[in-house]
Image 1 (spheres, rainbow, N blue to C red):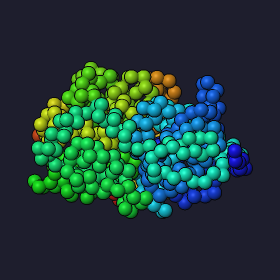
Image 2 (cartoon, rainbow, N blue to C red; image 1 turned 45 degrees about the vertical axis):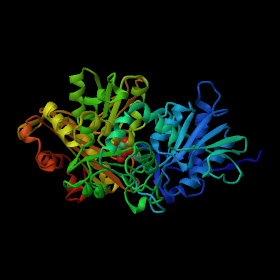
Image 3 (tube, rainbow, N blue to C red; image 1 turned 90 degrees about the vertical axis):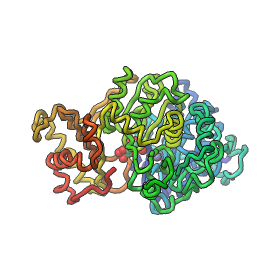
Image 4 (cartoon, rainbow, N blue to C red; image 1 turned 180 degrees about the vertical axis):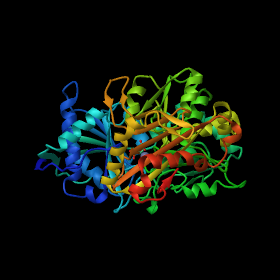
Length: 550
Ligand code: G1P
Ligand code: ZN
């Protein structure tokens, strides 16, 4: 065997963020950058398995969102895997697997874990971002303990184990060898589609399309394309052309593959007017995010989670009801009201899908979601874009109602949590850190303070104790909670690669149905002013308005 040991030195800055290690492509192209991180991961995996067996004899799943550097990274990782004792790799054809598909493949094949190559919705191409993320045997993102261990290892690493085997071909299905390791190139869609078939009423959806239901599914030149085409157009009979921007491109066509009204403005434009399709949807770079759009009507992700929860029993896969639900802290409390009405538990976790894993594994929750266009369930351990789209399709079929009427009826029943997120991108890191530090220092004084008729009942820095493993994650975002349920939340993004991004989350509850319909930004203007008064955002950043409002 031509196993080689290459000396290396620690590279600083390889601490994974909210969702894996994400950096500029140019950073990943530095000599041994990817190798160091992957070797650190394999070192940890080889030393922490309970049976002491490590990676020997194990199967890993590997694939990515097809962005620039995906294919080269696959070859590098295969060589390291072979040299570190992995027995078998299930590799998505062409190096492609969406994030939820990796999760599905790990679970269905009972693999040891998997590696996702993606920077999610961040732009791609040589000037864009790249990323790598490890998922464990439950199909979900590595937990905090493993993540920290890998980071610690990147700071002490001194050698890389690899081989000098040539690149493998990844375009044809079938089995090949890298040293003693088997590489099985698999259909990226098959396992995922099988999971969807188990959850949704495909017959019903097929009949909808047959009867002229129209849809525009925008996969934003990203990895969702092959999945949406195979399932919507292939299996469910949606007319060809239903899926648009469906070829995964290395640079996502130069666009920002994030399904929100700002970045998916083309979809929003197509959903205006009486001639627009009945239903619109979009997914992101690695197809785990989703946006759901009705005719002239955009559904906020927090509302989407609440409606899904309220109506879950109308979907075959959730017919028996939900064990509980979870949302990230900055996500609106709309779902809390539904959970209360249903008498099920509702958990509030820090931002990031990894915090849902234990709750899902323990059977405490069935659905979960984040305000950042992420929704999912216990069918995998990632958020799942196309799953959410199929859920809404099935719901429209089962109720015979439009997206808009489903959401409006929900507001009438439960009231509306009017919600918006304001992002201030590209702030100098020290300015952002100082803003947050001063805000944290000001918290004791803010407690009980009046702002007009409202006053603050809780001013804190969110801390979460995992109910399953009791691990504590503190410093997860500053919350100002008011006596009328309104909330203002401040946190810094953990996924950016340039400067810092301040996220300001605003929420206010409106039970009066005659007042639910005005422009969202207008309804939240008082809270925006208050947030600025407290944190001095404009003065400190020099930015008069946010760079993105969703
Ligand atoms: C963002 C979102 C968060 C999501 C993550 C990965 O993280 O806010 O909800 O889980 O991307 O998709 P952030 O940049 O805020 O740390
Ligand atoms: Zn994503």
